Length: 190
Image 1 (tube, rainbow, N blue to C red):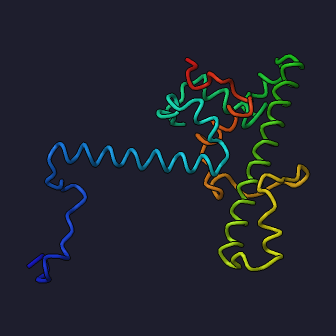
Image 2: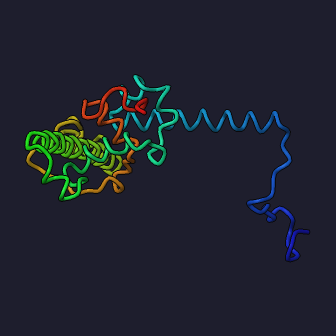
Image 3: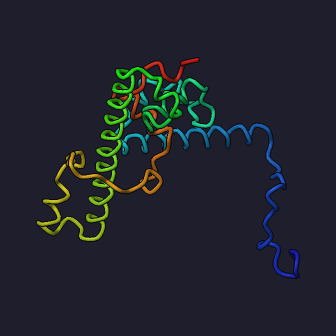
């Protein structure tokens, strides 16, 4: 009998309790968990269209974690993401006009890349949804679904947030590296 007088098969161990696995079994489970995580990551990167950058940087990306970026990496990423707004007003006033112009130019390009990328991901999600709801029988739906997901409109501003589209800062870093807004050696900068 388990606790509360019920059958023992309802008993679940507490989170802190350890299962009695041997060291070899734990190692195998860890390896399987890592393999599953890597395949899910690769599938996700293929879906997001950043798989090529992932393959090029694979050994460095294994340890990519936004919270563990060094100050230089963090600064470069934030400058692409937020532009001139990362500087204090006094720093902006003292900055050379050409440097302000270059930072603004990179920031605008970054915002355009993010907008187009959000549109592509939204298109993929909509196509997937339409196909699941209507199937492949409808000619109208087939015309919509057969439209490539990478067809975007520059004048349209996608208002979905990165969180709503399940895009992390790590994904954004890879995208920026892929399009050249961050240097190729970004992950190895000190």
